[in-house]
Image (cartoon, rainbow, N blue to C red; front, side):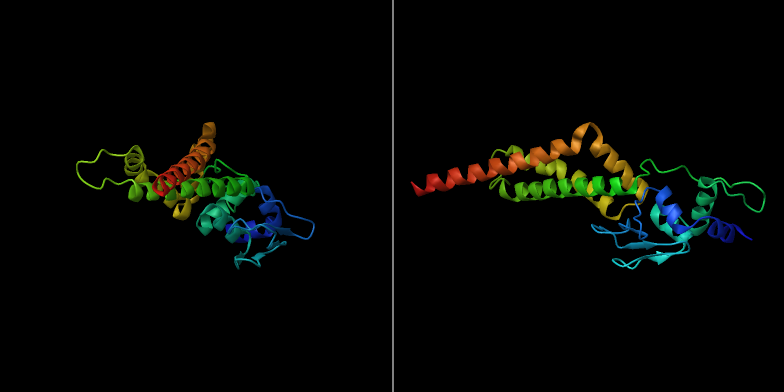
Length: 210
């Protein structure tokens, strides 16, 4: 048998899913890691997986390839190493290093939280760039307009990675944001600045009414 047949015969899909961090219930169902799945919609059995939510399906090699953004051969090699399976040469093949964050469910939750905070801040910056832009060349630059000009490109870059980046890129961004509670600070900062803007606008409206 070749490496694909050897791996598929040795590793059930459910066993691989549990090994890589998915929590599978007694009915063989789990929350799908391939879309934002709040309720278990991924069916796992010995030979294949199928998601009733996003339609993802395949065997254990296709599952691993999709989970870690690998080619079929790389996925088969990874499974051979992770499960101690011998190849036709009599030894497990080498594979790439394990991802930094093997607990897929927790990573997805952290990733969604980071994406939500980043987009909230991005929308705030977009509002500031328009609302506080100088009306004439002689006007002093508002601090909020300056912050928007300085930060917009960076925040857009980070949100793009979380939207279309590969797994390793997304893991790196999430780890950076979660470190030292950076993302929690950004969440509080954005909410506080939103409240300040609302109070400022209300004060202006009251002044105009007088």
